[in-house]
Image (tube, rainbow, N blue to C red; front, top):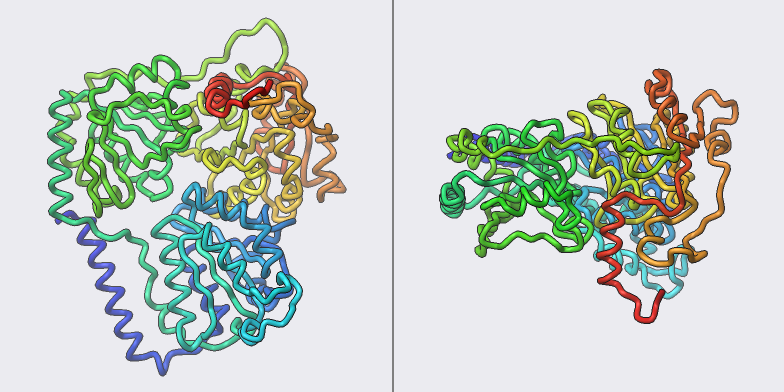
Length: 599
């Protein structure tokens, strides 16, 4: 039995021993308020920031949050931004979760788009909702924030659609601690949002603290050993049949389900070439000599497309086959040539094997495939580079901008890209060692990146990472711009590149090339930070760059690169310009979503 399996079983045995001891000692254990119990669990999970907006049904709990020694109440300008921030925090801070607190009805519904996005992209977020007292929920008076028809459970039913697990606290003596533990365990093991209601009259109710001595389980269920052995044998047979012509294709769930360390060991032990899908960017080091770049089906660069699709065997890790992640479903990989590793199951060609998850499987696969390293290294991997094109003008084009930005990035930078030109443009840029790329490619809610940057920057500060850098279009920024104020208030110092191309460029390429609905009102972008909290101009600095020369000079400025204050850079770009990958994706999407009779 592998050491990882033994360790997981030993952890579970230790938990059960503590649980048995706690049950015998519960009567004599120290009592703790329900709200404090929840905060203690969040502290154990390393969730040091809580996002949200105050409301009359959560204020009592907020007193406990504000007085807590290690959990900081961030406070947001609205609940949607708070949900985005919790999402960004969880993406950067592995092995923790994002936490958002809202109030009943009006607050929680405002957050729901952000929670749905976290569900879609498998991000662990706890949504705490302060709700009316248990007495009021039974008597159903016509309270404010209700629908006026007595349906106090309407919002819970909505939350069921966008969370993996829900805990509706009603009786602290019966199950408050157990219910809190249940949803938190579901959150961290499934990498999905969960929902918890906290009635006003239960926040200060005392319960036993005994269960806090029992660590929450982080481990996925152990693999079925017999099925796992069969799967390993089958994979080795396919590698041998492929004569070592195998590659790894890494995707989002390798990040979401925390197998990056195991994956790094496997790619180095085997020597197989490795590529990633857009949502898997920075799951492996993009500076690794056997890393070949981003595969996006027919949108891929020709040399990458040829290398991936000509391989005799592809071992896919954590794939999410969405439209924008696969070049509008244009993967040209026969089922005979693919193995898929997922969090709770494995697919070998046409056969699915339940209860064989990749967290436990990958270390064993590394050991089995290590002897094939010499043969695997006979297959060359063209270096993933981003050359700056030579253009005979001084206009900041998309084709020039992204490889130029590559010279500015540093190891351990956290780089956030908005849906649109940013998320497509940066795909072709190899990021530095130990950098973290954050983007919302599946859900694709414009404006998400701004709130997410707040959470990402706070997580980066917790972890001692480098700079946080945001790329966002002018149209997207107008949706969630208020959160720049929260960033200054909490002392984080991201660099915000605002791509000013006069509106919704991604939408123009999809439909409505000259339509007014894709236009926006131009703002005085360099005045934003003074308006949103830096009235004296000491916390921030803003710039406008109009051409290649000005941008190059700014990127070479040591004071700017130091990022010791919040900075906003307005980048003037052509209205009808877009990265190559976005243009191809838009063409493919246009064929799929063709409007009959449309322009």
